[in-house]
Image (cartoon, rainbow, N blue to C red; front, side, top):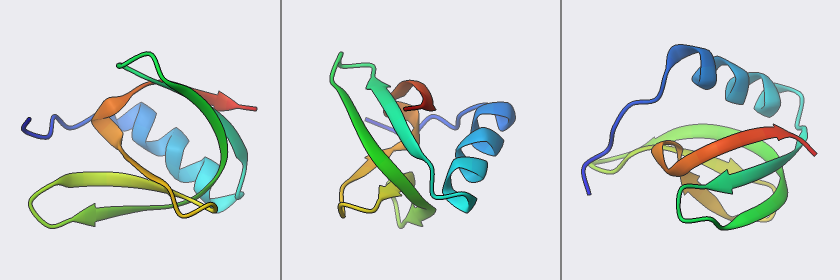
Length: 70
């Protein structure tokens, strides 16, 4: 599935979570939910932007339905 850019507002909030290394609660469009410490946002060539977590997991930004402080 092609990457769909997220809103600037949501992107800014995710960047703040990463700068502060916040523990966040994430809900994906698939319904999956988890908590993890936000670390960095990066571009994966040909795959869009991804949010990377301290546990080495990653999720593509357009797959995030909701994200908030845990």
